[in-house]
Image (cartoon, rainbow, N blue to C red; front, side):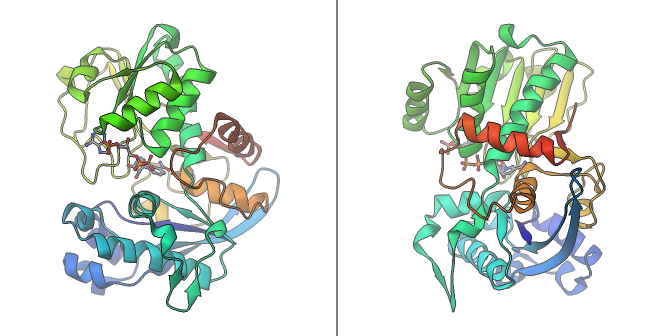
Length: 339
Ligand code: NDP
């Protein structure tokens, strides 16, 4: 049995979908109510692989909202994630993905030190961040979509916003070691971590976002922003490919320009319909088949009976592991969302 720990993108979003999911008592409530709400299993899931295997899982809503971080309600945010993990373990889920901000909170606030949640001792090997698969899928999207929109990778300048993060650093490693990308911009706020990454990669130029955007042909957005940025389309090169892997999205503006291609990053499409309702509430275009790559990672581990935290700790993702999960992704019928 696999699990998915997820959250909604904002209070407004949460209020909207609470009713749809059959929780009308949550729909009119403010942030304080969500802060005290316990985790809930709100969906049960059946997934078939193209190999013919079938697996069962469930979605655990943590009731965490990005506003909790924006309002510095750190203790609440950490409690949400630990409680959701304990809830998954109590329900005998073998492998659970920590979606979106769940793994970021786990890492940022060093939750590994809080193993005991009431009467449950968390077994961390039963959880995965799902970030290896997400990074792999984003890299496939860079390679496939650039070709489709006529951007030549060896000649292109690729900017990674959130380069020092778990997903961002893995994307950089892949671009440097597995593609012909020669011009790579590294963007984040902490300069020491950027220097460290640059040293590890042996290439890449540290840039501010403002300076990088007008010079980039491809932008990979994987920054952990509780709210998206408003960016005008004039700033971008034309043509330009923007792959937004943030959850919530890094780009708040709906960019509509014939030469700016915006791709939902870190999303996979399955070859077969999945029996669930949760992807409707996060507005996937094809909810029966499209999902976050991090969620798909726990499905892949369940298909393979690999009950281990495949993705764990920050900035540990290797190209080898990306290839390994990529191979399983193809084997079971997932593919990167195309442009
Ligand atoms: P991390 O916390 O590991 O890394 C975040 C990165 O963003 C860091 O480099 C951080 O560096 C940078 N960053 C944060 N704020 C800003 C800012 N305002 N401007 C520039 N850089 C910034 O996060 P992950 O790699 O785990 O996740 C990244 C994103 O991917 C998140 O939005 C997450 O929700 C999403 N995600 C998507 C998944 C999917 O399946 N599609 C799966 C999992 C996550 P610094 O602090 O120095 O600025």
